[in-house]
Length: 85
Image (cartoon, rainbow, N blue to C red; front, side):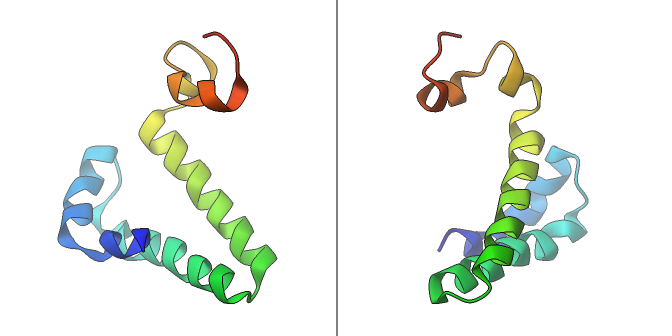
């Protein structure tokens, strides 16, 4: 499962490069892992999906930045929007 890698030391070392403190490793990993497990077993699906959506939006803005969603460099969204950039 993808979130399990976020419990490792490599993710904690990478967080300061993204402008986040290393102490955020465990909350971020848990925010992805626990709702994912709940979705798989079918428990609290609406809450779990909402939490995962918030986490993924945060990841998009932290890693990609808002400029790549709205301006030049929006290549990652071409497959979803079917527009010329």
